[in-house]
Image (cartoon, rainbow, N blue to C red; front, side, top):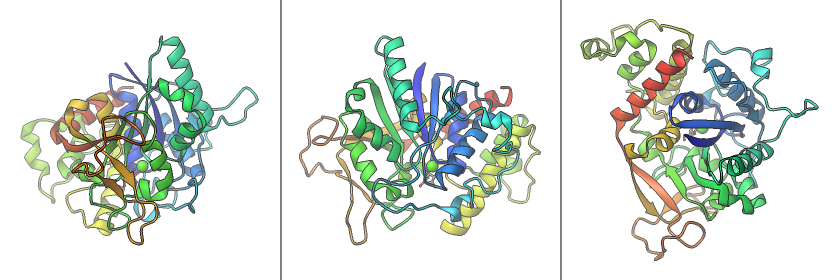
Length: 358
Ligand code: BDR
Ligand code: CA
């Protein structure tokens, strides 16, 4: 089992990443931290707890509230894509104030919230000690402020980190400027700090996440397990055909996530075939790296461009003559370039199936 810490800003696709992390057979989720990003950290904290509850997380998995703003820059959110509270249009989640959701918020013995850094540090130290040197994979699906703070404040603990896997960036492609992707644009300095850490770093850029489109067919599969057979596939390829009735609450909730995301991706970016599910690809990479084609490059973040701030600058031709060391001098990042799309959706649907019965 791969021990994983998950840092998120839910967010529709973050919510699906939480589901996948909970129900991937070879992942042991240690805990979750929240960060500013798609919405305020108050909302992302609440949303993460609501998702843990909705997707059947065991009670020891808790949400730890993280950074409310980037290291240096003003905070930015993305209501155009995720709605005002980060999970616009999503149905079937329990209220944030309900006792069952509150139970997923990390608190100390005196009832005070446990901050993200403390939660991460404890989980990493405990896994290292109890697991005889077992390392933790840290996954990020939002701006990397919490992770950068961990790297800067706990350099001695980096030996206990297997890898940092993050969704973000693009290779010559942006979604919140011509060349900057949202997560990196929110906190470019944090991303650079993580890329400079002497630890393996894996980037899942939008060039690849844009292949994981939740098409009408995948949406139909998601809604009902009885619609998996090839005979039924054609029924749902037509836009006029009604989607199957969701066979339970989990599937209904996931379906409303996809529907809202589909609408905002259509109106904002003109995606007509469905929205890309960016964030769960980080979990898929950790669970099944063989689904991805990756190449190692030097990657840096543009911190002061007139038009390019937040761009991930990928040195495809190794102009800088970097060696194979992780961190500030070497080819510091394994960049995902290809994805076995069908296998990803099979993995995702298997997790939905498990979550269904959780
Ligand atoms: C990233 O930004 C957010 O909108 C999503 O949650 C994802 O993490 C995609 O650019
Ligand atoms: Ca996200």
